[in-house]
Structures are given as C-alpha cells and as structure tokens.
Image (tube, rainbow, N blue to C red; front, side, top):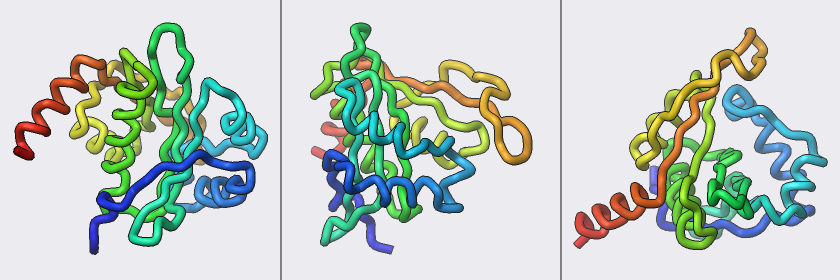
Length: 176
C-alpha cells in the first residue's frame, strides 16, 4: 500500500463538511475508539475560536480522509488538547502524518507549552503511535467513559514544548 503521509493537508472544516464528519465518526471501525458528538457540538467547534476543526485531505487528489479537532487554542496556560482525530484509511501512515502536523501547529503556530490528549485504554494502536511520536503517559482516568460493554479508562498523554523541540532537532539530524 502506498503511503499517504507525503500528501496530507489540513483545511478548516466548513459547516457543509459536517455530514462527512458525522459519517466518519459513525463508521463501525471508528466508533469503539471515540465518543461521537452531536452535530451541534461540531458546529460549535467550527465556530468557536478556542477550537480548530479541520478536514484531513490525503492522497494525490487530496480526498477527504477524516477530521481532527484541537481545543484550548486560546488557553491562557498554553495547553492545547488534541481533542479528536478520526481517519478512514488505516495503516497507511496518515495518523502519524496528522499527529506531526498537529504537533507543529500546536507548538509553532499556537505557542503551546503543552500538547495533550486522552485515548481509550482499548486503543492500543493509537497509544503506540502517540508514544512513538514523543507523547508521555501522565495517568489514567479509570472507568471514565461508558461503552457498549461497560466502561473504559482514558489514558492522558502529553508532550511539552522542550520535548517537541528536542524531537524535531533529532529528526532533522537523522534526515541530514
């Protein structure tokens, strides 16, 4: 399978994109790993300046491949949250490419000191990705989200600006 990571871009979500956003959230492959929002919550995230809601476009023709949401973009403590990342094609490097773009946006564009997220404990694939991209586990919110089978815990992970800079420098040296 060809890697999509070379052809990934984020564009601001428009209200006309919300049918697509809802369909990606409702996809059976994504539902176990997220807590879907109602349309009005997405409308609020598109409109409210503390959020950044983006459509992920990927591949040679930049087809819509998912969406991402950042929250805390105006946080006075410079703590930006990766609120949601939901993608359709799996296993093609798209998640990694998005996480790198979002970390760059959080630290370089939004001036974050801390970039953080929470991930369901059953989502081992996402946890491995976040760890490999420099996120550190901070703790667990035990049985904090209801699932079809009971409850799941959330794992809180973060990266600090100094860690991001060190990782970026190491990557540049490795590419040279």
